[in-house]
Image 1: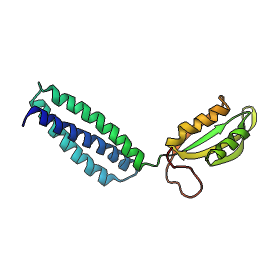
Image 2 (image 1 turned 45 degrees about the vertical axis):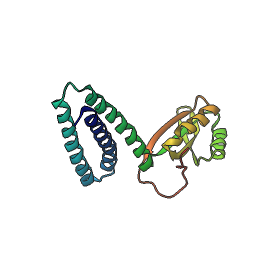
Image 3 (image 1 turned 90 degrees about the horizontal axis):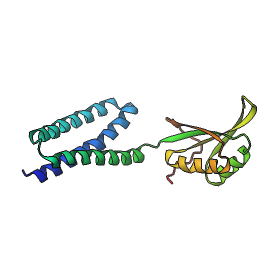
Image 4 (image 1 turned 60 degrees about the vertical axis):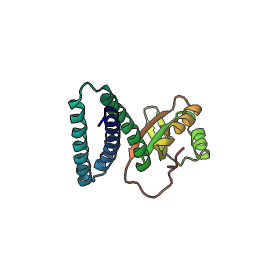
Length: 172
């Protein structure tokens, strides 16, 4: 086979295995161990086949570029897969010393579900706002909050195993 055809094959094999490795990682985190092991077996076999082909033809710069481009493409496609199959639900606590009521109203008006509760901090009583949304909404959430109070304190963490209630997970 000619060098260009092998480069195309290398590109697609590496891109596909890179994409599948993202799926494997998600399955592994979710406890699907057997399927993860099965996927990594095929990843490793394909990886060795591709690397051995590149080593046979070390002077083939096209093979090396195809490998790099395939890895980059696989990572990009893997991120798209992750966004599609992972809900990535986030919980964000917001503390604003002066504008908590305004932020609460603003967030509700823009479609975010807000739970508020009171707590005690270093400087006394404070109101804490909690918003649960998809990770794709975090940038918009931060823009809304910091637009109202640039000094607001926000902390976000990922949630797993949630059910019931109201949370805005639609993309956008």
